[in-house]
Amino acid sequence: MTHTPPVDEAVPYRLPQTPADRTAVPPQTLTCVISSQLRPDDRQALLDLFDRSSPQTRHQRFHHGLSVFPQRYLDDIVSGRQLALVARDTCHPDSYGKVFGLASAAPTGNGEAEFAVWVDDAWQGRGLGTLLVRSILQRLAQAGTAAAIGFMQPDNVAIRRLVRKVAPESSFRTEDDMIVVRIPLAGPHAWQR
Ligand SMILES: CC(C)(COP(=O)(O)OP(=O)(O)OC[C@H]1O[C@@H](n2cnc3c(N)ncnc32)[C@H](O)[C@@H]1OP(=O)(O)O)[C@@H](O)C(=O)NCCC(=O)NCCS
Image (cartoon, rainbow, N blue to C red; front, side):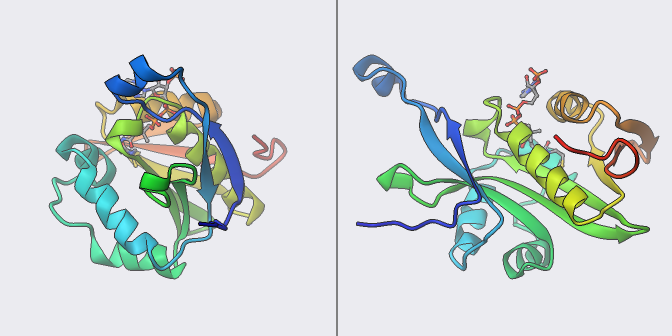
């Protein structure tokens, strides 16, 4: 079977292994793809990502304990009304096309955009969130966006570490029990990472 995935950036990436894999074969470096070209079947892939996500991940991503994927957000992503990047598995026949990460961004006025990122629980802590955030910030900067804004739960250590690493020039403030990060993307030190 021949697959021709829409490839924006092929990312060498070590996929998690089962205990059986660990004893049977040496770790393999496989390839996932960060792509801005969403396909019709990504709607179901994103619903599956939501179903696989733990209550904590859903709460950290959506700031509520949601039991269903927000329909309007899903429509906006799949239709291209929001800038969206997905990370997909393109090398395992069993899970080919599976979406295990999403970054998205929507304009908020004043040349700014609100961004968010979400990684499958099983793939967290392996560098994928960093790749997705870097990619979406680069795309926003290329599109002339002045700043990216993100909303984070105060106890979300992972996203705070990620943002400080990817964009050390970020500023933080507290609003309604949330931490709001602002990442400047334009100006004399234009965002180039
Ligand atoms: C936040 C999130 C996107 C990070 O993605 P990820 O792929 O796990 O992140 P990375 O592997 O690139 O790691 C980024 C940093 O977070 C740290 N980190 C990752 N998981 C962590 C955890 N559970 N606890 C503490 N730190 C963690 C990493 O160590 C790394 O920091 P370092 O470089 O200083 O070591 C992911 O955890 C997630 O989807 N969470 C739920 C949704 C969410 O919180 N979205 C953000 C708000 S919109």
